[in-house]
Length: 225
Image 1 (cartoon, one colour):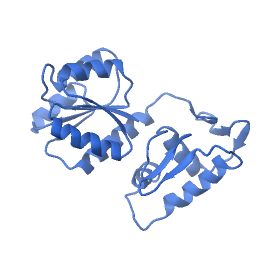
Image 2 (cartoon, rainbow, N blue to C red):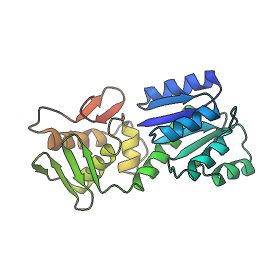
Image 3 (spheres, rainbow, N blue to C red):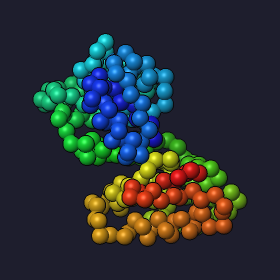
């Protein structure tokens, strides 16, 4: 899951890049508006996080150029300008969310997760594929190679959530909120039980496991842990 961070404050950028990478995201950094726009237009990102006040091009101008170019990538605006009018301008320019500085990193993560969930739910794909695992969303049919896999509706929802974020470390909190619409409960083993069942169904009989546990963080769906 690739994120483009456009931030000219290098100290803040280092902090954000480090935190986002530790949270399982792949992050590219641009230190100016001009560089950020070029990277956004030339790369494939699932999300763009941009400061509003930038050298060469400000964040809102970047967003306008992206929308004029037909890019629908969700954009989260970071800004010290926090009045209602400022937030309205950011959203009217084409931004998907607006976070006022200073902010808690946990809130930034929550906003990012929410934008990614919203964007994924509106994606037009009707068939998801990771390695030899396929999920036909219209027929609700899951196969791995030539083997058909029968899953409960909850297991299907869990698998779809993981497949849409293949390669990304998915935390238990993300799964509880995204699959069960629950707030995090540190005493609950709900996620672990369902992951165990899904792993048995998906990886049974294969020498290439696709569901991996990242100790202390969560889970990854993909060929490599």
